Image 1: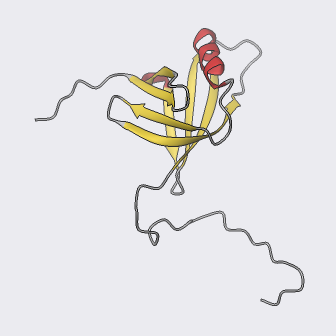
Image 2: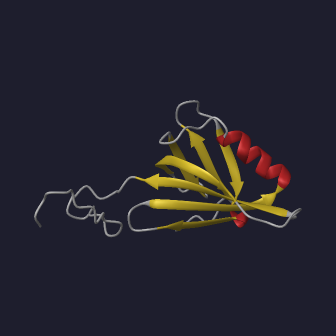
Length: 128
């Protein structure tokens, strides 16, 4: 049958250094669009946020990471950046958004078509 012993953590691991950080899944909200862009929102107390900021301090844009949600297996993602959340002057919890890009899993290029965000730029001198 199905093993229901899932963990309550999300693990992010840097492939280059094998360094990892565990996030409490109850404090995480994940949103993903059809193009593979993933936003991981993490709302936590200051001390946990300090660990998160220290982990991503030396991570460069486009660096390869893995994300493992509840020990269901690692997925490769590319780091795109982190946005510090807004809050009151001294909030109890701080909100950060980690932006990741996940490579499409479908190998058929016809399925990996960009749905939104096409450029409307037209070069000068070209007749459309």
